[in-house]
Length: 269
Ligand code: NAD
Image (cartoon, rainbow, N blue to C red; front, top):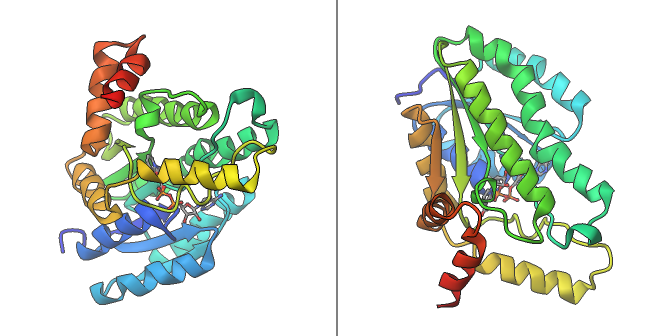
């Protein structure tokens, strides 16, 4: 019950890592404001929080929509009266060669993965500053450290989240607000099912791409949620989630230019 009376705002809480973080926080007595596009998924998350006897409110909103974000602070403050945690988790994926990706899809992804994080942070910083001790948790990715081909939009957004989070962390260093940036490797969520790709791909190619992506997503979301919450509780600046992420980040540090071919060679073995 170490977080009893605190409130966490969690985006992308209808599925995967967001749902798991909500459960990990609720287990510790934290109230939650769950934000997502998907009302049915939010209801499912809320039903899984029932045993923990906390207050959970559901907010159906598109994190890619600046106006929808602007309406959230009032809606959440009316119900909870305070915000101690902001978990910027909502995210989407987009695969394919850069030239085959439409500008519309590139911007769709950036609007959610990057601008969603920036706009939510701007919207909730006044409440976080008013809290006795607050935490911002931003979901980047191992693809915020390494940059595989056919991931240009996703990689650019996750590098941007990493840079934004680090600068903000330094800026808030003398405040009671900590900033934790999270770099998961493969976590077994629905992210591949909701991913977009090039317009010319056939249904079979899309299905095959999803199967290949899912093969890399192995860690149970509940484990990822616990790792993230424990790191944020300790006010860590950065957390790697999974040995795959830790290893890839290590290879990138050793070989900052040629890491991709090295990782490919090691994978081949
Ligand atoms: P997921 O698809 O299971 O969950 C993402 C949630 O975000 C969904 O509930 C979805 O409805 C919601 N969402 C999507 N667009 C939204 C929007 N415009 N407005 C509001 N909500 C929206 O995926 P996940 O794997 O749990 O992803 C969570 C975060 O973790 C993402 O930022 C993702 O990039 C990051 N991540 C995931 C992995 C992985 O292997 N699963 C690895 C690295 C990083």
